Length: 356
Image (cartoon, rainbow, N blue to C red; front, side, top):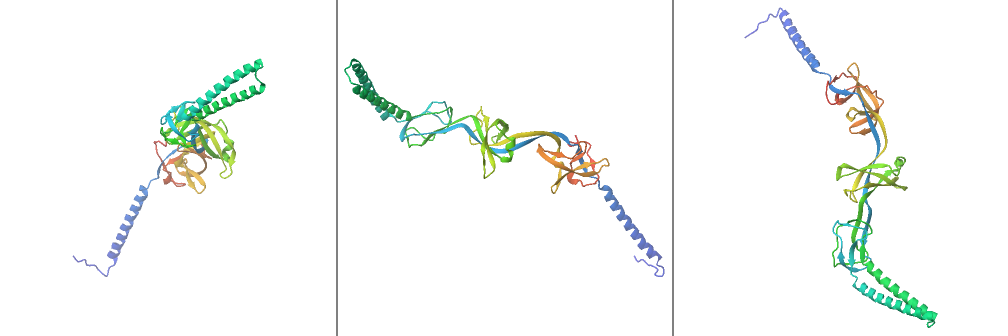
């Protein structure tokens, strides 16, 4: 189809161009308006800061040690005849743990005892003769010395036998047995380790700046990786009077009761010491934002707009953060903070965990 225009009359062409421009402008204006109308204020949750009890704590890591522990070793080179303990078995104080060969020493003891009996009998006879004047004082003195030598020889034989009988110095649990009967042990060779774990000594270090808050008798709470849900409670027993000049730290020894023997020597324990407690206002950690060294929260005003408010922060406890410089009635945004800017309008959730 061919459209014929009158070139002498420009009015139809002008109206056509004007109509096209108006339609385009009207369409663009409606689209921008729809977009602006669709953009809503961010939805957030807000609640006032809650009162919370904060506790100052000193945290440290310590090593568990047995209350008493000793490694029993052989005092001589000898063969082991008998072992009287089992792997991890309980032994009582004075109980025989091991016996070394002692046949030669027993034979020596028998001879020494015979000499002792003979010397004692001869001494009694000379004493009787001296009483009647038939023995001189020199003879009596010589026999007294002979009797003493015989007693000393017998005592020496008994001591050698005692050295071959190894006893537990205190009650405790024996280590795993690493030696067998019939083995030849050298002087100083370990035979068994006895550990008293009825209570545990916990050694740890703290900075010298914390010494003002720590002293003998202060309670502690320790946790072990083996029992993460069970705290072990005890008390500080000793504070080392000497500070390590290299680390500027003080060594602390605490004692933990261990009635069920759960704690073992060598365990790594986390120590917590409460030094002070105070009540303060707390907000969720997610409600606090940082700007360099400063910390802020967003507070919803009566006009429905968010205002950035500077605060001072303190301790953390269970997802809560201590804040100062904040009104107790302020509505602090604790959900959706990332979508909020200073002075922007916000919409509050009517219900939810944060609001409740």
